[in-house]
Amino acid sequence: MSDEYFLDTPVVRGFIAGVRDAIAQAASASDACDRIRPGFAALLEDPEWLPDAYAQPNPESGMGGGIGQWLLFRAADRSLTLFALVVPPGSETPVHDHLAWGLVGLYRGAQDEEIFDTALTLSERRALAPGDFYALLPPRDDIHRVRTTSPETSVSIHLLTNDTGCVWRHTFDPEAKTSAPFRSGYVNVACEED
Image 1 (cartoon, one colour):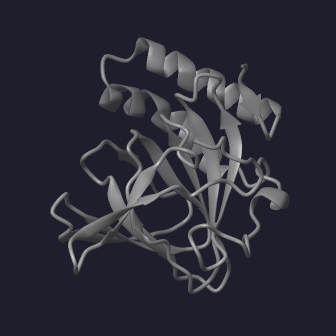
Image 2 (image 1 turned 135 degrees about the vertical axis):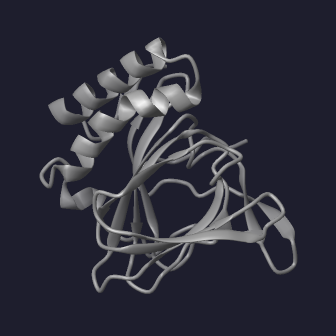
């Protein structure tokens, strides 16, 4: 297998090259995130790099509510992905985990995020505007739910260290304190069957 660029542009290739350099030089996941931050911020600030085709809702969404997850890049060994998460107005993701570290940031629209601790207790709420981003370093911030609060569809960009759409993760019911297996999938790429 080889690296897969589903959005094969100089911007994406340059960003991924910078990410790989940062990871190679980093002493930890936290250090890698700090090194990647400037390039990720530049990606979020560039209004031209993400075509509208990768910012469309998905009526057949595995997450419901028309939510679409568009794969932009995937490493050959599945250790790194870049994808766009598209959440229509009024829709929200289920409470879910990621099982990977990386960076998550808002590209378009507005979102509210609810973050849960490992006991499924709501620990933080934050409003996100375009350009806002944060490091995801499990177990911190790994369990969350996002909802679009803008009248237009929100698009967030995720750089994570697994094949997020195809690995089996978890959804959670915070009130019942239960979890269930979950695989979100991608709109534009099928996952291999187990």
